[in-house]
Length: 317
Image (cartoon, rainbow, N blue to C red; front, side, top):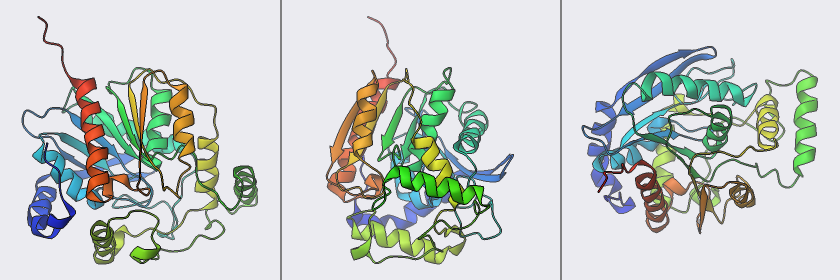
């Protein structure tokens, strides 16, 4: 397998950008606005990954990974969630991350699959990061007849880290604020986009990838998104507090030991409830797909081996 190295990021930028430009890009129309998508499926692709990214993210942020997947003859379909990235924003204040409920996210994912995945490939699985993990889990629990062959979760948002407040208190505050008509306002402590220094960041230990991410968002300010609304917080805490169902598909989880964004213990609790789930823990921060090379390579190796195991066709004797 080919693995991208952070030390070669600068030298590979032209190739990475060229791959982004040659991918198929466009918009699908949903009940909550236009949603941006990116699709690239090489000829004779091994399989296709449906990359479902996290909050504040964009497909454009994942250019390095998209290029890397193409080098490995792996197809990818990805998109920007409603209200972020290049997709239509849901509030007049573009900086507020908002949603009414996670079914809206899941319904958009269903449309992406129907319009951009199944017409183009018959061998595909999910690669979901952070909030994308909560969305994919919701989708799988409510779509028992999906054509997906498995789901790989990277630091999934199965439970939000609400420290220093307990989850029950955060839920009460969010629900009360929504009742009082504040659903579309910034939640307590939230603000417009503010880039943090690498030393203060909670996302990754890779300086080069972190600086590339921040530079991208400075250059393309339309991608910037700030904190969440009370409505998003209420929806997220409601979704992650539900009693979970068993999923019949094979599942793999990559969990980050130094994650301060989501509660990593929730990954192990969820894995213990599933019959077809394997979990690995890595000494990284939240964004395992943008981590230092040794960690990122190990996570991607886990992903590739999992994908091979669930998509490999039996050829008979």
